[in-house]
Length: 214
Image (cartoon, rainbow, N blue to C red; front, side, top):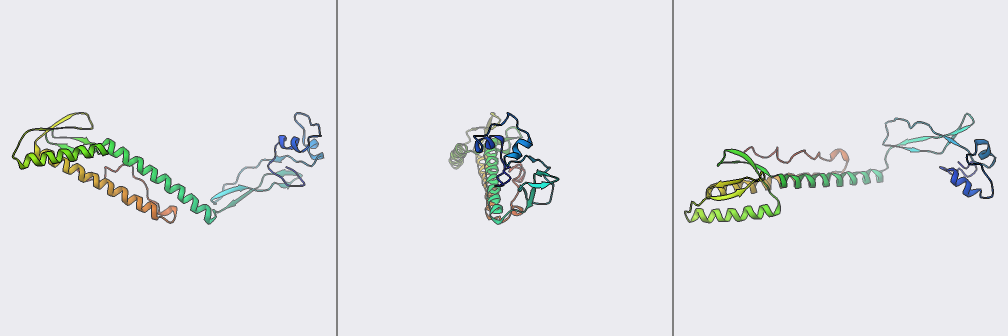
């Protein structure tokens, strides 16, 4: 520290730069530094206090030596607002990742041809395929056709369904997709309108557990 100007923090390189005409040893001692107006600042432990943040203050003279000081304080309104926006963005990204993972992994469905649950993926291309299958199944039902239809699940197994079973499966899967979106939209709204961190919602571990049981 520069004792006269109170410049701090400083390192030996700064001292050499300010005193280019002075020849110091490789590791000058405190006495050498003091002769030229500089002082070593001794570290102190940062206090554990009930405050938002602890800033480092200006070194203080204690027992003939300069020591670190600490200034506990609460966040300013501007800092609180900035921290809230950072937290909101983190939650938005967590929710986005959760939604993407949910659509990739798919929703559970009890397939009648095996009487067991497998998963229906709901990415953009998957939903287009489901809509196409639903339309085809609807036409077959209307025409009285009973030709079997096929669907590949997330488990990479081919399910064999009647037109009515296919229509029911696609209808249910798209209904579940809308329920997933409803959860996401609700959470997004809560994130957007939160005025404090305490009002922010928790992003759930799963968007599937709250869906109707199959």
